[in-house]
Amino acid sequence: MSLRFGTDGVRGVANAALTPEFVTSLGRAAARGLGADICAIGRDTRVSGTMLVAALAAGLTAEGVDVVDLGVVPTPAVAYWAQQHGQPGAVISASHNPYPDNGVKFFAEGGRKLSDAAQASIEAHLTELLEGGPNAVGDDPPVGDDVGVVRRDNDAGADYIDHLVDGKVGERGLEGALIVVDAANGAASAFAAKVFGRIGATVTVVNASPDGVNINEGCGSTHPEALQRAVVDRRARFGLALDGDADRLLAVDERGALVDGDALLAVFALDLAARGRLRGPAIVATVMSNLGLQRALARNGIDLVRCDVGDRNVLAELDARGLDLGGEQSGHLIFADHATTGDGLLAGVLLADLIVRSGRPLSELASVVTPVPQVLRNVPLPAGVPDLSDAIAADVAEAEARLGDDGRVLIRLSGTEPLARVMVEATEAETAERVADALVAAVERTIG
Image (cartoon, rainbow, N blue to C red):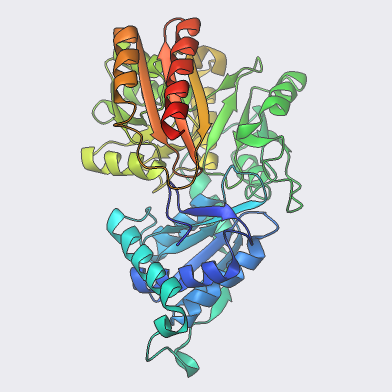
């Protein structure tokens, strides 16, 4: 099996690595592994989306599972549907990746990411199906009226919008607040104006004309430069940048400066703590979050709990510790009291309310975090490279000794791409660059 579950589902180039045949088998495997009678499917705006929805639905219905087609909706809308209906859901999306890529990710009953056990069960069934061919279908497949059917849910989008706005904003609303939202030509294109219009904002939505191939192209959270200019040009109060499936959010302050997930986590944490609503008081972030976030929280008596990369790991840590706020530097922000997964539109609504409530500009709110210089390098890897930890342990130890308490080192294999990610933080940018160069060289030397 060439494709496996990564940090967030299965991804690959659509109709190459991620073929309809593979996705049909994945649908069969998910039906067997999840053991549900109904499964919802949503998708983003990629040209390959309808093809892969049909393939996944074919696999599910072939195993007797009824499919509810939600159409083009944000990933968190599928999670919300699963939570409300007590059934699993699936999303056809490659999130922030370019349009040729696509992917499949699942939510368990109740709208949470799959457990390791559920994921392993699906993988085992998938391997059996792919290696067994027609014989793996089984001796007694559903036939006649036992096969599943596909039906459309035309109310799911409206229900999700109600969830986003009801009770999330103070009585004053956002009247008079001019904001700009970049929908990344993705799944939120038809939702952003409705959501922020409902809470009273004067909203301009850009990059909301998807054509199947322009998702994430020079826009959204991975390319916020145009949004930064638009906020300044329109004299907006702030801007919001979503990604292709709208499960992450970055912001732009009134001066056009980018506010990343770390700074947003700090802004939300301090606001919740000031109102006595931050359990712990602590939040969860990943190993990639900047040391500046940790220091800002510590100055305000808030602990930072770190976990592995991926919002499913953030959620697991929030559950284990009974905390309510967590996220990633990349913009996955999770409010456990409001949602079961990262939600860019929800985070945007809550941020808008916070800014209006505080009466302070976003630039001032975000200034609580002074980022430590951070260098990120990606090293391409050949197929089948094992964990590099042992091979470069001495190099990492030398780097950590050099940095001491004034920096951090992290080297990990990407969960979505064939890359080794090298991260170095240091109080001096030049030091971080030199240490990163040395570690990249060590990785390249190890892989030959």
